[in-house]
Length: 140
Image (tube, rainbow, N blue to C red):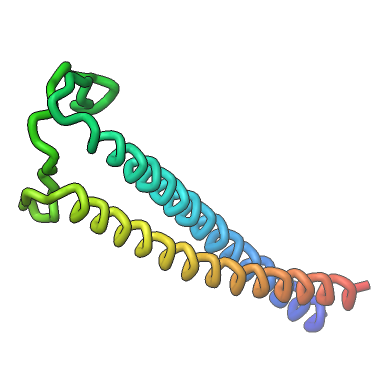
C-alpha cells in the first residue's frame, strides 16, 4: 500500500514537472516568434529607408498609423527619431540606419539566447518524459 502511494506521488511530481516545462517552452516559443517578427519588421523598415533617399522634393503618402496615410512632400532627408523617454532627435539617414542595424543586432542576440533556453528546456522535457515513462513502467 505504501509503495503505491510513493509511486502515485512520483507520478504526480513527474507530471507536474512536465507541465511546468511545457509552459516554459510555450512562453519561449511566443517570445521567439515576437523577436522574429520584430527582426522582420526592422529589416523591411531598413529597406524602405533606402527609397526615401530619392524622395526629396517628391510627393508621397506618409503613414500616420493604423492604416491611415497623409499626402505629403519630402523636403528634408533627415529623420526625427524617438530615442526613448519621449526624446526626439534629428538624425541623418546614415545615423538612422545605424540605429536600426543596432536594434536588429540586439534582437538577433535575444533570439540566440531564447533559442538556447528553448533547447535546454526541450532537453529537460525529453528527460522528464523518459522519467515519467520509467515510473509508469515500474508500476507494471
